[in-house]
Image (cartoon, rainbow, N blue to C red; front, side, top):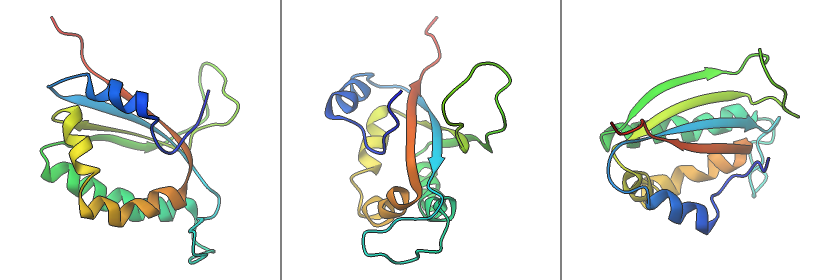
Length: 134
């Protein structure tokens, strides 16, 4: 498993190739113990707190774009299976389309808040999900 912060170019292209229609994004989040900002500020801030400086305004951007926050919770010990390191939090956000997420990521508001995401996260998995078409 490769835990990352940003998508690779081929991953982004595959995501956009999903085409039109809603897509739910399963977010598996691992926080840093302490936030890490390039300029060294807020060194006593937890990674979780830094991430929420991003998550709260990002949720507003998604809602304004017609998306929804469907679920968000802290992860508890696994019932089945095993991983090297447990996730800290899980969230499911639904976007009207993959393009919606791409458009949000190009806004000045996103650029302003994204530093907090990077400062707070040790890594994440973002898993696009879509209900089967009948």
